[in-house]
Structures are given as C-alpha cells and as structure tokens.
Amino acid sequence: MGQPDRFIKRTFAEEAEVITRGAVEWHDPPEMGLNKVQGDGLLSVHRPGDLLTLCEPWPQAGGHDEILIELKMPGDHVDVVAAQRALLRRQARQVQRVEERDPPWLGEEPLWLVAPHLPAWVGRVRELQRVAEGCYGVAPSPFQFLWIAANELPLRDELVPFLVARSGRPLDEFARWVATRRREEWVLSMVQYTTMSTKVREEILRNFERSEDPEIRARQREILQSLLRAFPDVQQQWLEKGLEQGVEKGLEQGIEKGLEKGLEKGMEAGRLAEARALLRRLLARRRLELGADELARIEACDDLATLERWLDQSLTAETAADALR
Image 1: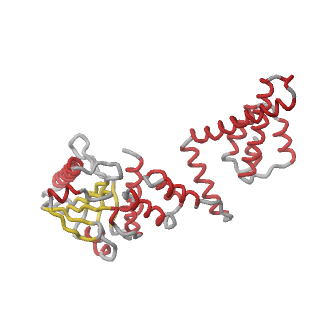
Image 2: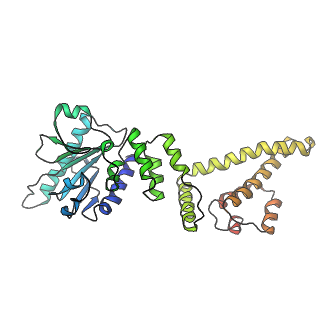
Image 3: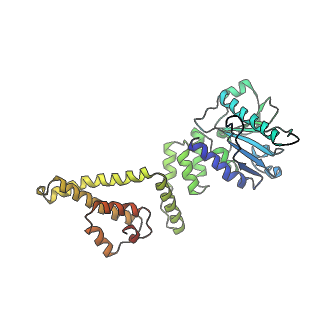
C-alpha cells in the first residue's frame, strides 16, 4: 500500500468521527477469509440522526450500522476490474457479517466507492442516480452502492476526507483552500502524499514562514526535526552540499595563502574553514547564541570529524552548548 493510500485512510480515521460529532466512526476492517481479502475501511454509524445536518454523502449513511468504503487515489485504477474487486470485497464482508451472528444477519452491507471522478464506463453498464453534487447511486443493486466523485464535491470542511481523493485542477483548488483550515502537520502530509501541481505545492510551502510566536516556532521546529529524522538522506545531502561548497571555497583560500602549502593542505584548510562557517551559520539560523569561549572553540578546532559531529548535533540541539558537546 502506498503513502497516498495511507494518508487518505488516516484522514478518514482522524476526521470522520470529529466531523460527524461521533455519529460515524472509522475502523480498520478485519481480514476476510479469502486469502486476505480486505477492504480499505469501515464506517461504523452510531447516531444516523446527527448526520442529517451534514453535507452529502454523510446523510446517506442513515439507516445503516456499517459501511464498507473503498478509496481510489489519483493514479489508482477505476476500471471495470477495480470496481468488480471492490464489489468482491464488499461481498466478502457481507458473508463475514452473516457468519458472525446466530441467527444469521439479514441486512445488506453498503458500499461507498470514493474516486477522483466517475468513469464514463459506469454509466454505460449501470443506471446512475445523482443523489447530490458528486454523489451517484449505482443501480441495479440489492444494497446501497454509492460512487463519490471527489472532483465534483463542494469545498466543505465536513467533506475533507473525501476531497483528499481529488486530482488535477480540482486537487489544486482544494489544496489552496484547505491549507489554512488544517494543522501544519496535516498540510505537510497533504503536500507530500498528494499529486497537486508543483506550482501549488511551492505556493503552500512558502506560506510556512518563520513566525515570531514562540509556540508556532517550537511546533515548526518539531516538524522540521521529524522530517529530518524521517528522511536522513536529505539531511546528509544538505551536509554534503555544504562540504562540497566548502571544498571549492577552501581551494580558493588555500591558493591565496600560498601554493607552497600544497593542494592537499589547501583542500583540508578549505574543508575546515567551510565547516566552521557552516556551523556558525546553522547556529545563527537556529538562533542558538554563541559565547566568546564557544566561538573560540569553533575557530580553534582543526579536526573535520569533530566539526561534522557538531554540525549534526546543531540540527536538533536546544542550546549552543549542546551542539558543541
């Protein structure tokens, strides 16, 4: 399962209960006894009456105690095979629910299929009833089969879990709209896992400017540290890029001090000088104030390994002393 699929499932899990004020709750479905036949998620309906004031498709959950939900992100197949597999998983859950009870359960498990759009082939082989904007009942069917086209849904807070499945220009529109309505961590996940355009992605990231609010700054720093821990290769690339630039600058400084010291010594001096400069810039950027003794330690250090270790520690240190320990 890819990261986009996990992201939309996590959004449903986190928001469905909040949006519906507890009327609907997300569950990871149990595995079904057909060599691991498992749907994407289950929506357990606790108080259907509370859903009537929400935007469609939430009111469609009324009259059901559970809904099997299938989620198709941009790039996922929404062809006949994909739809039939979704129906197979719905049928497997239907059988599972019947077998779980004595006497057997006599209800019908609903199926909600969420995708960016409604493919043309569905209308050719099935009858469609437009329930609401972006919501289509698929017939004939002995159970509720609802196709939810995320690109057609209105921009409403209670529809955010469905809107995550948007694609193309509707996704860009949604991303700009939701970026100011959700917490920073969620927005960063959306930027990372959805297929919005590069222009909109860069636009949203630019809005994460440095704040003077200590609480916001602490949260932004925590997010940055989490990302660096999650992507150590990026952290290493930053350090390597800084050192590569240091080699170039070091060569210039070494030549200026005298070719007689040799190219090798000049490169070493350049690496040290750039590592010291990079360390000072990083500490200043993180606003970790250096005392006179700490500045002297940096300038006196002629061991590249030590400077690199201080650089690593500076990424997460709370004080300059911690960075240079």
